[in-house]
Image 1 (tube, rainbow, N blue to C red):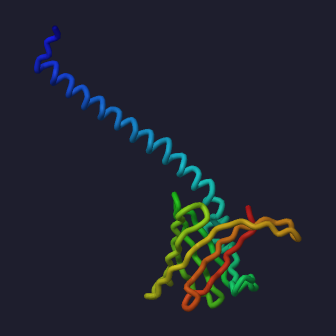
Image 2: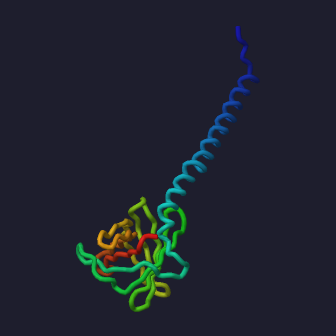
Image 3: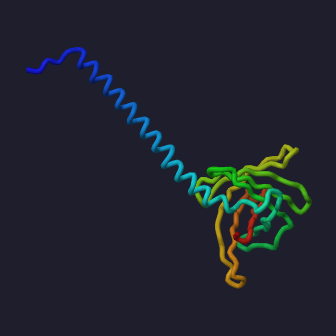
Length: 165
């Protein structure tokens, strides 16, 4: 006959709790280091090449979009900075030399939202953002592009494009 006393019961409970905490700690470490680290590397690999080549270089050309056709460049230039994870910063200098600054939060590798403001003014806006790549057969060049979709009234649609690095 097995005698089960209070001391053995306490050891069983305390051992179970300690084992559970150690297991939980291992799962958290695995999640943070392995899973999130892999996601972060994937995001950086995808978004880091979009960054402007030099710190103060506006190297993305802006186009106005009307309907399905890409219009001629509208005189605006942009620079993009990768902020980490799924966040990008875009600064656009338009043809009148005014500047607006926006922050893009990507919901996946191709879609995101842009919130922007004109520094020093109380004017803010919101646009949808779509990333992609294209290949021009006649020139043989590859381009990265970003389509910024406004509300169609106050903020119009734009295409921001640069030859792939």
